Image (cartoon, rainbow, N blue to C red; front, side):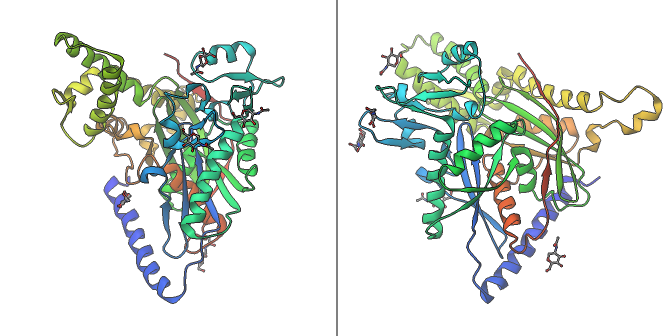
Length: 436
Ligand SMILES: *[C@@H]1O[C@H](CO)[C@@H](O)[C@H](O)[C@H]1NC(C)=O
Ligand SMILES: *[C@@H]1O[C@H](CO)[C@@H](O)[C@H](O)[C@H]1NC(C)=O
Ligand SMILES: *[C@@H]1O[C@H](CO)[C@@H](O)[C@H](O)[C@H]1NC(C)=O
Ligand SMILES: *[C@@H]1O[C@H](CO)[C@@H](O)[C@H](O)[C@H]1NC(C)=O
Ligand SMILES: *[C@@H]1O[C@H](CO)[C@@H](O)[C@H](O)[C@H]1NC(C)=O
């Protein structure tokens, strides 16, 4: 078994080799500018990266407010102007009916009238079902509509222009896109259309878990056979089991919980603070509650590095308390993991002969964490306990997928030192949905 320490050294070692090679390389000839960009069009955030030849480094292009990613939000103002990202986020309160988010949930997906009516309750903007069952959004008083792929294209255009400015290139023409592993052909086709609408040719589409595995270089490590990718975002948890052989990835199993994410941990802490607020007889209004929600989010983030945090400059929350308040949620993180192993071993009978072919936690060579919520120390701890092995956390979990699509872009560009092969074979695996 390869220990995590060895893995780190290997990654560190190859990075140093790349850096040294890059140093000499750069002094001999200028590195060609990247021609293909890596795009992660996410439900809540979208990001872009490039792979630099010779240095072998991935660069995530900073977006608004010097952040790595752009909120996937667009606000259509009454005067006809359009705002994106953080600028659009600022208008969610004042222009709720025409500020569109979550467009990715609707891309290339057909819905029944009943399910659109049900989904409408979650959104302040108006959903319209087309004759074919696709959903469009109303973006002005006169009833103008926009499709989810058009929303996607506006976000991609913004990110593409950031790269063009950054590299001082007139026009980027090629990209690699990531999509959720569970996306079917139609969803992939409509996501591709989002890029094509702005004249970007899609060189390849890869699934998000595969991208995350590529980010850690598991396409070129001989002793890595099984990679488990755990993605915990704001509202969802997804686990994918990948197998890798000769740079070829395939998904073996997927399990997810659409009602388990970072926001649920916030809500529990928020509810707890409310009991303290009531005890202190403090007057609460919506402004104060809004302030508390922001404080709660900050506090949770602080607890990933500190032993305690402070809410509204008076309530101290220890990490222990936070973990106690959220113990049920932490327990639920194990469920999709259990289900993955149950699924993968389901066609194996109980015969003694077969016990050797059962896949167990010991067969998992590498664990990759994706999504901001995986910064919670308790989550890292319980994953390490579950697998008796530390998960990989060297790459910022918010941009691990972007990092991976950028590497795929580099591989397709065939630029040294990435003349290795990496491909993804699509399998017919069905995702296991866990309901609460
Ligand atoms: C932007 O962020 C980077 C890295 O986080 C930092 O080094 C840089 O100083 C920041 N730039 C500005 C203008 O804040
Ligand atoms: C529309 O309104 C926004 C915000 O009020 C403003 O920043 C923008 O300049 C206006 N655009 C036009 C075309 O008037
Ligand atoms: C509808 O409203 C939008 C923005 O308010 C405007 O840009 C567009 O021209 C209008 N369309 C029609 C048909 O009036
Ligand atoms: C938004 O739409 C709802 C229902 O369609 C309507 O009741 C409300 O007045 C609208 N709000 C604004 C700010 O236009
Ligand atoms: C990559 O390039 C090196 C040096 O040119 C060569 O030795 C190696 O075989 C190549 N690898 C692949 C997978 O093509």
